[in-house]
Image 1 (spheres, helix red, strand yellow):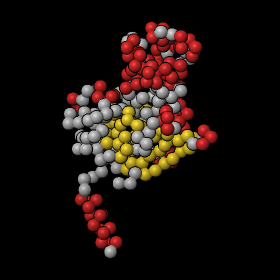
Image 2: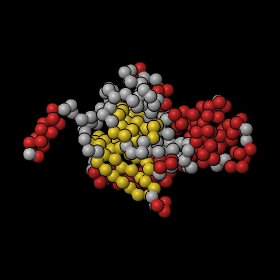
Image 3: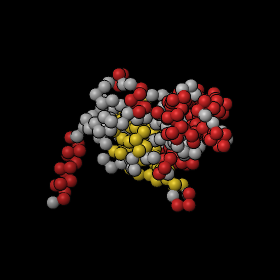
Image 4: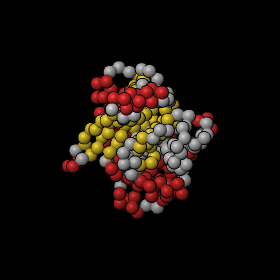
Length: 270
């Protein structure tokens, strides 16, 4: 009885639309929101480099989906490590809403107020600002501290981050896109900030959207999108999605008991 059923399922899969894919010969490692977790980021870099060597030659690209900064304790270190990794191999970095707030905070007090309430305090302190001095500072004083402590090179590096990346049948973007709008008409604000109606939209987009921004307990596999923000700053789990041909798999670094970071890998079952 089971063999006829298997044949039916095989025929249905064969008749279905082809799976999304990246161009032949390419391999993509797409990393979700890091949010100042340098420990998890360092471990994931090592895991990605080891995986890339193990799997074999390819035109490999790493893409970071934005929100490198805020909330976690080591945003300055994450920015420095991302820049160094980019000098070593092909690493493309997307802007997240937290990078936008960070850059705007240098000149806009109201944005600074919002930034500090949503994890920016940790970013400012990670640049060597004295905690007692910070606690006594006005918003205008904090701006001056930021201008003094955050290197101009870091500000220029963050300002260079991209809005989106197309990788074959996939669109890589920080937050998502406005449903039913062509890619050329998308607003940057949506790509950095949107949740609904993007998350609840069930119809196909022009590409399968790989995004961060919204935290899920596990990778959120949907037919039209894949959410890979697993809340590193509070869950202790940072995720990379690996795309090659029409295959999709996951590498994660997770902090376990005793603070030890373990590497977890898995295949996506279509």
